[in-house]
Every structure is written in structure tokens, then in C-alpha cells.
Image (cartoon, rainbow, N blue to C red; front, side):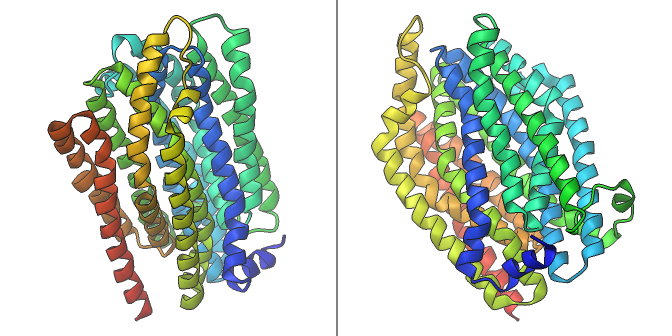
Length: 461
């Protein structure tokens, strides 16, 4: 579809159709990537070794920091790109795209180097025990120290393509990488590599699938840049206007910080959970993987909504902008209510999917499933208010409101969630620690809605 056709989708197609057209590919992509991220834990769980499962829980926090870097230049650059398209500034949009592309390369290489230098102290901070650390090292060497660049670059290219209206193409690349990982995991873990190297095999499969996804994204971005306001030229990156560079970071930094603080909160959660033992740590890792189902759907809806909100904010069509916000919010809340009911009813069977309860580690695995089932029935209740946090944050990012996005990020995690962890853990033990997310996200959602309402009133004036 030509750029003009993409603009019609943003500015004149009925809101419900436009949001659905942009959201379906992103939701599918998020779900496939959910499977792709969960599949490592699933196949590692087939070993019945709770220490391997716990090691991936520890390592996953470090790996997820790559999402923060992808948001820095992907959401920061993509949001600004959509607003520039809404203003008809296509040359500036190309420069923003190129700047985001090369910024992603630079920050990826820096992160890989830092993790490589500080890997063992980092694992100590994350609460890795002697039994889990050796597996976590195997996983992180391939997925982060070697693999950060393809992960971040493919994520940034996906955001840029999506915000230019190429949601389907972006989703094909990310989904293809996920499907490849699903195919490669059992091959490396149980066929090609010896016993006790299952974690290394899972990491190798993840690395190769991320490289394949990145290659597809690069080819696609190069191809569509012939007709769309996208670019991979270094000269365009150097020519970016100073105010546009600030615009990328104004939204990108709060968005990255939102994800980074979420990971910091998980560091505290893992450390507090590890104090209760390796089995509760493995159990919370299973739950955090499973509960990404509603998160993936909600983030997909929000990512589909963002370029439409950004475009109409920049073009001045406030009615269409607010209709888009309202429609996406209602759809997300309906879905999360169904997800709560599903997880409450099916917690036990879902948890047993992630770890085998037969074999030499059967007793440990059964205890892990017992913990995970109880944890999931509590944590699933957070889905609707967690969606409201995502939805509000994406709305603020779409409108270029970096300051309120930053405030929301800090207050949500630092002021509410992390203190609730320590308080409720001290008062009620494991049950309180698991319930802290509900208290923290509810308070964060109330604050977020206040921020959004204030901003919309300002926009209306």
C-alpha cells in the first residue's frame, strides 16, 4: 500500500476498523513472540529440573532489558515519525527513522559489552544461587552478550514500520522469528546437544531465530523505504534536526525507563522470592511467563492504537483521536476480564505445562507446580488495571508527552510496586509478596488516569 493509502487508514477509515486493522497484526505478533519467549521455559521444564527453570527466571530479567532499549528508539522514534507524517513532514520523518536505526545499533553494542564485563556480579545481585548460576551464564552469553544487537534492531525496525502503517510486515518478521525458535528449541535441546546442556540449547535457538528475524526486518525496511518516509541512510541520521532528536528522546527515554523499571521491580521480586527458596523462585518464573498472555494482547492493542492517536494528534483531529483512545480501552478491558476468568479456572493445568512432574526431580517439580498454581490465581487479578497502565502510557507517548510518561513510570514502580513488595512480604510472607503487584498496579492506574485526563483537558484547550 502506498504512503497515501496508509494516511487514509490513519485519518478517515472508521475508528473501529482502523484500530482493528492496525492491532490484529500486532496482537498476533505479540502472541507468537509470547510463545517464542515462553517456549524456552516450556522445553526446559520438560527436564523436570527446577534449578534450570529458576536460572531462566533470573536470566530473563537481563534479557528483557533489551526491550527497554528497543523502546528507546523504537517507540521514541516511531511515535515522532507518525506525528511528522500527520504534519506532512516526510523528509524529517526519514531522518528520524535513520537516527533511530543507528541509535539502536550503538546502544545494543554498549549493553552487550557491559553485561559481558559485569555478568557474575549481576547474577549475584539477581539472587542466582550456585545451583542456578551456571545455567544462567550459559543462557546470557548467547541471548544477551552475543544476541542483543539482532533483538534490539529487529524490535526498533518493527516499531518504525508499524508507525509508518506497515503493521503486517512488521508482524511477519517478529512472528517468523518466534516460529523458528519454537522449531529449533527441541532440536538443539534434546537432539544435537548432550544432557545437562538444555539451557545452552534453548539460548542458541533463541539467538539464531533473532538473527533471522533481524535479517528479514532489514530487508523489509530497505524495500518499503522506496515509497514510505523511512530510511537506513547514515547521511539522513546525521542530518536530523536538533528538535527532532530531542523529540525522539522525550518519548523514548520515558518509554525505555518504563520497561527498565519494570525489570528493576522484577529484580527485587526475584531477590525477595529467592529468599524463600529456589522452588518459589522457579514458580514465580512460570507464572510470569504464563501471565504474559493478557499482557501480549494488551500491548498489541496499544501498539496498534499508538500511530493512529499520534497521527490525529499531530493533524489536529481531536475527536478521532479521542474516539481511538476510547475504543482501544474498551476492547482491552473486555479481553482482560476474560483472561482473569481463564487463569482462575485453569491455573493448575497451565502451570503443569511448564515443568514435568515425572522423573528424577519429580518431588521438586510437584512442589514448584503447587507454588505456581497458588501464585497464578492471585496475580491474574491484576490484568485489567495493568492494561489501564499500558493504555495510558501509550496514549501519552503517542501525543509526545514524555514528562507525564516518565512520571507515571517512576511512580508506578518506585513509589508503589516495589515498596508494596517489601511491606506485604514482611506482613504476609509469600502470599503478600505475590499480591504486591495488585496493590502497586491499581495505585499506578489511578495515577495514570489522572495524568491522561489532565493532558486531554490541556489538549482540548
